[in-house]
Length: 196
Image (cartoon, rainbow, N blue to C red):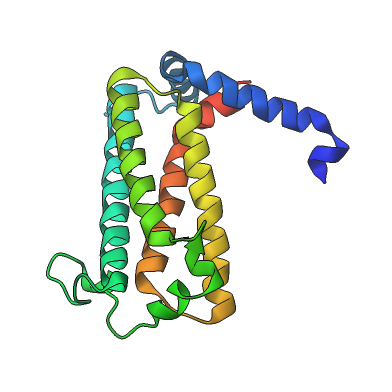
């Protein structure tokens, strides 16, 4: 409704996303200005170390997300038992009603299970983060939009868990991971969004 009333907000958002494509050099300048203005310039973490920390955090989170999605997919298909040594007990499908959500309307997207799409998403996200970190390709806007869409899907699926009154620990774990990934991406891109 706000976008319809004032199309200028949509134009500003579009321009901010387009400018994320040139983010690597601008991020250092903008973040440096923000840090020096706020007195944080004397801290031990430089901009490059901070960016490295963010990239490593994104890689670890997406790897854990892939592990959970792979576990859920394989248990639901009957390829492995629910109790495995390599999955944290917090995310195991023991004594929970995960099959109820998998067999519901919320458990599938385009005819495939959400865990199937999650495995592909996290694998692609890992590759994109590695290429962005090392070669500054693809543009940050693509990674940001992927994170935004995954976060939106997680909010929708969390609502589905609430509606169905199902507690699925692997689902909640991946939704939390998607939320944290989105927060890290937003933190990484925030100086570029506000400098416009």
